[in-house]
Every structure is written in structure tokens, then in C-alpha cells.
Image (cartoon, rainbow, N blue to C red):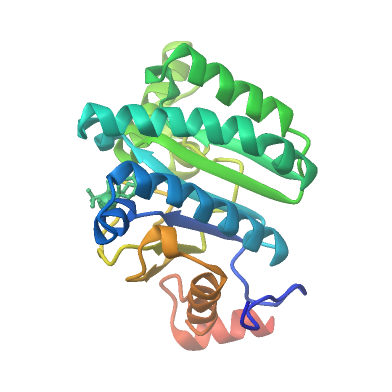
Length: 253
Ligand code: IPE
Ligand code: IPE
Ligand code: MG
């Protein structure tokens, strides 16, 4: 590696990074291979990204693996992706456990096969004690689904008489969404060159810094990850305030 490895905690580093891992199909096409070949190569890039996040003391990494819209792809590709999930979960869990990584799958997993659902539950249970890194994998996830799902859960509490509609404020909605137990992502990275969110964490990304890279996901490496973080660290996050106010807040004035 080319001097991109920072092992010490650096102030201003993102605590939570989300990644839209895009470009597997194009990566394979460039090599005259099938899209499934690209997805396999993409799985190796995931391992690298997780190792990087651990080494750099990032608290949470949230990866978009399969969107609610990806069901519309050719059946053969969807089936391969499901098989790949099962294989990767089986293969990687011992290492995740050893490295203190807690796996958490977000999305509507009820649409997956029984076998895959069981594998997900087992992987989550096996890594539940991990404290070094939370690895959220978004599978059959959609930001709109997430918000609709949160509405349903709040409506049920109203129906049960445990919640008053006037208490449904931003924090109540946030608490009913995926990733409610984590601070929202500080940085969103999307590979593959497209500049869009594609129904990822719509609510949670409200104040994330966005970083778009042309590199295709299977080529993602420590250098790209560090470039995104360097760019993040040079930005001023104002959260609606003036620059002067932010400076004063940061200086503790
Ligand atoms: C991202 O790569 C992986 C998934 C969406 C599952 P793509 O498969 O979207 O690759 P491109 O964008 O077609 O190159
Ligand atoms: C976003 O990629 C979803 C994942 C990376 C899992 P897509 O390839 O599905 O997004 P679009 O179709 O280019 O918006
Ligand atoms: Mg794509």
C-alpha cells in the first residue's frame, strides 16, 4: 500500500461511513466477463473496505449490497447475488468475529429464502459481541421502505395507545428507522461514477457529506477510501449555521 494506512485516531475522521458499492457489472463487461464475475470481485472489495474501516478506527460502516429495486434484474443475476450472500456470510463470519466486527443486516429480509434468512440471523448472533466496528449490510433495502416501515411501527404504537400522535416528532421517526442506534453517516461514498442516491438511506443521509468516485466497486481500495476521507476532512460541515458560528462551536466558545 502507498502510505494510506493511518492507525492512530485522527481528529475529524468520519465515525460512520456509508458506501453505495456500484459498478460491478461494468467492471466485468470491461473484461469481457459476465456480470456475476463482477459481483464476485465486488465481494473481495468488501473485505478490503471492512479491514480499512477497522484499521482506521471508523465506528460504523454501512454498505448498500442489494436494493429493493434490484429484484427487477434478470433472475439469473438475482439468484447469483443471493447465493453469493449465503457463501460470503458463511465464509466471513469467523473472521468478522475474530476481528470484533458486529454484523447487522438492514432491509426487508422477509423476502429472502428461509435459508438466507437463517444464515443472516446466525451471522448476526455469532458476531453480536463485536465492539470494534459495526458493519451494516443493506440487503433488500430501500430508503422509502425504511421510512414507510417506521411509519407502520409508530402507527402500531398509536393504535396500542402507547404513543400520542402529537409525540411523533423527528426523533420518534429517527428512532423507528434502520440504524436508529447509531449516529447518522458522516460520509457517503458512491463508486461507479453516477451521482445519485438510488433510494439508499434517504432520511439518515440528510447531513452526510457526499463523495462520488469514478472507480468501479471491484477496484475500490485503501487509496480510494483514504482519498474520500481526506476530502471529507477538508470540508466544513455547517449544519445550517454560519461558518463563524461553526468555528465558535468547535472552539467551545
Ligand atoms: C452494484 O453493481 C452491485 C449491485 C447493485 C448488486 P452493479 O451490478 O449495479 O454494476 P453496474 O452499475 O451495472 O456496473
Ligand atoms: C445501487 O446501485 C444499489 C446498490 C449498490 C446495491 P444500482 O446499480 O442499483 O443503482 P442505479 O440503478 O444505477 O440507480
Ligand atoms: Mg449499478
